[in-house]
Amino acid sequence: MTEENAGTEPGNATDLSNANAAAVTGTGTGEQWLARYKDSLMGVFGAPQRVLVRGAGALVWDADGKEYLDLLGGIAVNALGHAHPFVTSVIASQLATLGHVSNFFTSPTQIALAEKLLELSAAPAGSKVFFANSGTEANEAAFKLARSHGGKARPTILALEGGFHGRTMGALAMTAKTAYREPFEPMPAGVRHLPFNDIDALRAALDDTVAALVIEPIQGEAGVRPLSAEYLQAARELTREHGSLLIMDEVQTGIGRTGNWFASIAAGTTPDAMTLAKGLGGGFPIGAIITFGEGPSQLLSAGQHGTTFGGNPVATAAALATLHVLETQNVLANVNAVSELFATGLAKTSGVTEVRAFGLLIGFDLSDDIAPEVVSAALDAGFIINAPRPNTIRLAPPLNLTVEQAQSFLTALPALITTATAAKLMEKSF
Ligand SMILES: *Cc1c(COP(=O)(O)O)cnc(C)c1O
Image (cartoon, rainbow, N blue to C red; front, side, top):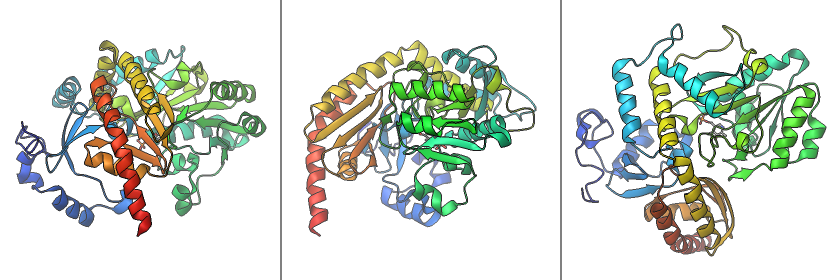
């Protein structure tokens, strides 16, 4: 397959994103598709950068046939890259066998996945799992868990500045960024935001009226900012002291992303509850909350929470397949090896001032506010990356990214920074 026709060559006739299914989707160039997007999709995401039609491993192709190395992985979602053969075959055969049952019933994949998550998180006896479809839904369950724990005596939920927990109302209330929250006030009551990584502020805020402290071990959306090991330990001790729940949002950091199954547990902090989503289904939508031990696991009783799609046979099969590949193919060792290459290479790159590499969740700062320009230069050069802040680039590539693929970006980066610097100067002079 040549580069020119890679994106449009007829392939699997049942793939609706493929040009071969033109009878259903129509065909078009990137430009034509984006015009149709603008006329038909709500503008909440701004203008999409490209129209992607196909992927294989860490590579994706757009509607015009251009190839990209995907170093963002759908924002830490495509844990095994695109169209992983084992994951896709498990999904297809599960869907062809049993696709959906209501929660009046269960299925073997749902049960096996719950057991697997409890095993991987070394959860103590009595621990339990609830499945949802996304990160924000997992955090909604966490919010209700906190309310159930606290009742009227514990009206407060603590969260951190810089934190991101999702876009539905409960998760949004716990998300600090005012621009996301203000248009939709009033928020669900009781959430207070504390300064990041500040143990004294935490100690001052925690008392017996606090239902829960909700934190990310590493803040992804804020530019990959880690809480210190001391903070995590203090969070565990202080919440225990006051009978408050410690809820860890590992939606972005969980499932091998940081080179460990779960960042908080690897740091020696077992929370009372942990939320998961992004990488869990290897690209298929699924979320989960794990409650650790009897107490937190008994808080929500029959009828108090639910979901139609959560924990369905296909999503749980996708997650089981993903976990199976991560476990049996030694992928976490690859995460650590490729992470080290990135960390060393980025630190040596001129114009990079700080590197924060946690497995394959990597943030690096640039000496100027040119991150959006670097993202755009990277796209032109065939790399997908992301700028969570004006001077910060985030990488969250597939966990099976190869050393050679990582090296190709490191080799290209100096020129991307030069191009971005020039573009920024042009912007300024107009
Ligand atoms: C992405 C993210 C969420 C929200 O997940 P959605 O699936 O987009 O709802 C919540 N918490 C963290 C830490 C995230 O990175």
